[in-house]
Image (tube, rainbow, N blue to C red):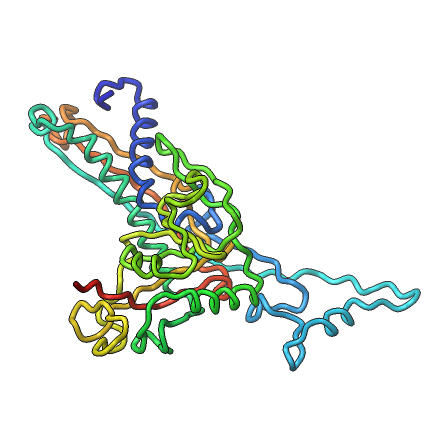
Length: 358
């Protein structure tokens, strides 16, 4: 039903929100995991995440604790809990670490004329609702990607030790090295992800224990060359796949998005590389930032966890600012934030990709 035919304002706003969220769904990629923080009205413009540290840990070393000079925890940890006959152990308190992030407000707004509304062959307001949903999701994804790229736990393709020396593609070997690092820092594999449904509804869906790996769609040829890679179309039950999932290998599930764009011409020289590496200029490799996550490695406001106010003003509504009722608007405003909660329980793998030559 066209929005203009819904007379009840509450129902109309509900329908508009549903349509906007429905069209946001295909663009939500990184946002399917993480600590989903609900927007709280009148709680200030900063969100606080609190985690309690294990015994022997500190804010500087929250993941590895009670290690001796040789990196061995066993005896030190056991001795710290040893009791003496008739002596009550000393009661200890817990230590907490607070991580904060600013909350920002964003907006999308389209305008149209009464002539477009009355005479155009397309339903302009409905198209604007679709575009509003897409832009809302892209703003959230781009903001989250910008934050996650700043993770300090970095790995580099090939023999690279920095972005400027990246000379290799995404391989199972580098993923295994990264997984070893995550396990060493007590990262927990993911068991559920947010999955979109019809009418803009979202919910969590159980998945097999895994590390989710977000890649640019440009890296698909490298994934298909990876030993043991299983494409999503070969899953026994395709319903277990989350939106954007393209396949899996060992404990890794791959989610692809064209929005995870490369840093052009920022890697090593491509002359003589085997395989030939993609380069926009033909001189230096384009570098892709692959994000690997674990349970609660970052926090953000989820796609439908934040406060979203929609605007749907039809033309022909006259007031002193529009005395002839010539203008209509469709849009929304919303709040969003994202923050890395544990740098060593996630990773960014910077790699090149093969050039597709004839």
